[in-house]
Image 1 (tube, rainbow, N blue to C red):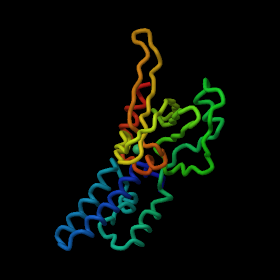
Image 2: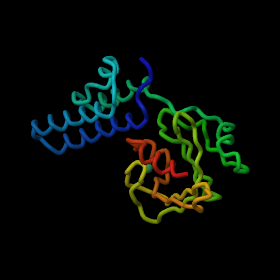
Image 3: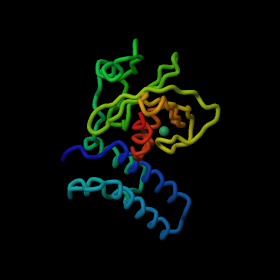
Image 4: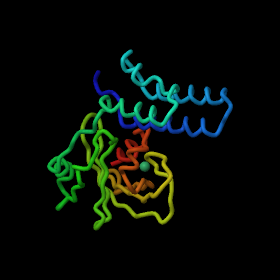
Length: 210
Ligand SMILES: [Zn+2]
């Protein structure tokens, strides 16, 4: 079976399993518990457009998970079928940002590429934020600036509540229009963002502006 589970889909499954357990813990009504479990199972299936019978079987059974051990094992068993983000090298990153002199390269050795929807990192000294993501089957690099927010907030890419930074990117000046800047509150920690993001549309809409 090929790798077919994107990072966003894996996060949907993880979040449904955690949410299902949380709701099951606060009710003793068996009818409610069953409804919650069935809803979780349905949401997992709905996150995939098409599934072969083998794939269908692999992601089925969320509703039957009872113990912490079973839940952990269920997620672990999906590992070989998770699609990976391209395993980029420092040279790839320099190629994506050819105009940046002395590009700050993140610690790629510590990155779990399966757990990425985008690669994000900061050059803290320069208050710069870098993004690399897939656009129409190709890697694309976008750079911006960030200002740490004093207050926690909701990330516009993954909807998680936590530490955020106001991150701005600029379009390339075109003849018809001047330089435009676009800002969004985005998780300060891109690893956490990648572990929460359940849909890449917000990311694509934001970064696609430049
Ligand atoms: Zn986020």
